Image (tube, rainbow, N blue to C red; front, side):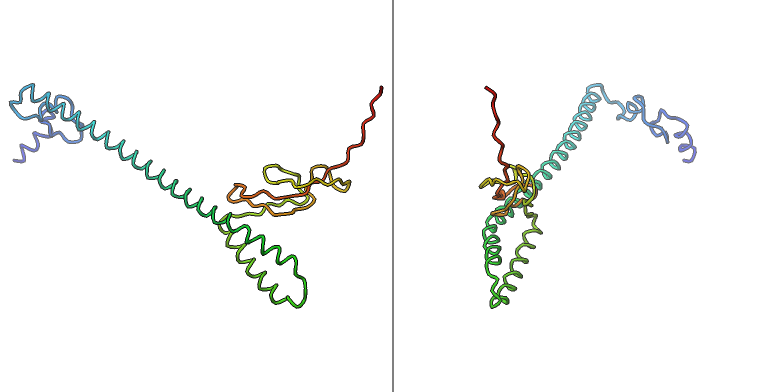
Length: 197
């Protein structure tokens, strides 16, 4: 029996040679003895079909992975839009707190004021954690994408097109303007141009 093993290693045409890839002759010798050409052709067809099915399987797996990623991204965007809608609905509440804190400076209301400031700060921090940012407007150049000009004021103290007052704050949520800031913009009075006749 040991002489049979030894002869198999030396005889690569037996199809059991170690350390080498099977050649076309090896594959033919691996076929069942007495196999007719029709069966060999059918076997080749089945192998080609198997390879095609494997390729299809790999493509389907890749398609499914892409689909899974796309669905996850869409789900994240939906969640983001839901939070954005909630934040947008809370902006008037934030404005009301700001107006309440700006009006009452009476010392008799000091304790109430502290309570309002605490609630306002908690609300603002919760919204900021979700991605809300306030648009800085005062002393900035007017930007039509971030600001809504309510009025223009003639002045020589500020350059033309500079925001001199913020009438209502504006907010950005994850880079998207939820509400532009309502502002007053400086304009310089243009000197009358003399025309030579």
